[in-house]
Length: 319
Image (cartoon, rainbow, N blue to C red; front, side):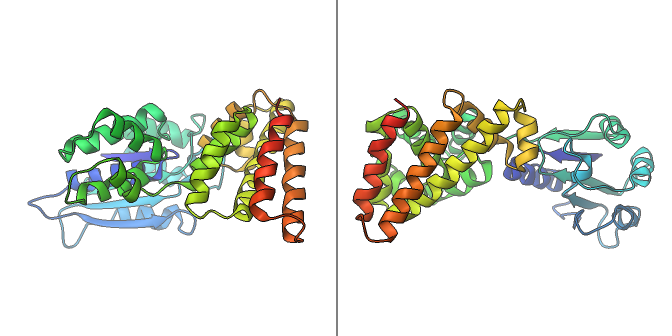
């Protein structure tokens, strides 16, 4: 059996590959596993290896990463006729895994149609909030870890929608020798600054001043400098402005993802976030950030006072 494993969730892709390797073990002996990067390797070289009998084991697995020539974004190009021929008549001693970090395959392509007919296709899309919660519960249950509903909800709120990061963070809880509680969870789980920045920007645009200052106070307690926060917020609002401009011009979510070469999940969240705001409002915030940054760096404003004044003045922009 050969495979195509694709999607935006790198962690889930890697777990699927590891599962295939485990399923192909014989007498507790792992098959030879060879990994190629399609960005630097030709299909001909990979297929030549696939058609070679393994020397030291009964079976071998070849992983071809970054198969962007299969994506709907049409990134990269390969002569796929030899791959089509191989998939129609594959080596029984080789499992070929084609993988790539893209949202969709181009189902119009002949090679994709051949893959769908001859391979098992596994889509690893980014987790949503429900999927994130399900993964956390499943992992905790498998490790026989029990949390109260309050502790579970708090843990889920701290984790991003990234399966690889979730597994790494939960591994710390699983290894903890004593009883878990809210304090231990806060100590062990690494807060994701990207999530905090998104939550802060979202609260700013919704005019939720109490929530804005709660998030900022939490970040301040973690020693996040006002200058750093100005920088990351400026980056976030620039991205919002780009997304909003493209939406106004008539592009859809997929078009925006390709145009900005951004992560599909980030674009999806941003499209939702900017739905009720205008380009002018976003530009106003960017101008305020630039002005605050300049005044702090020139010594005209205390950095903490300056940043907090910016947060207060934002309420007037989105009133």
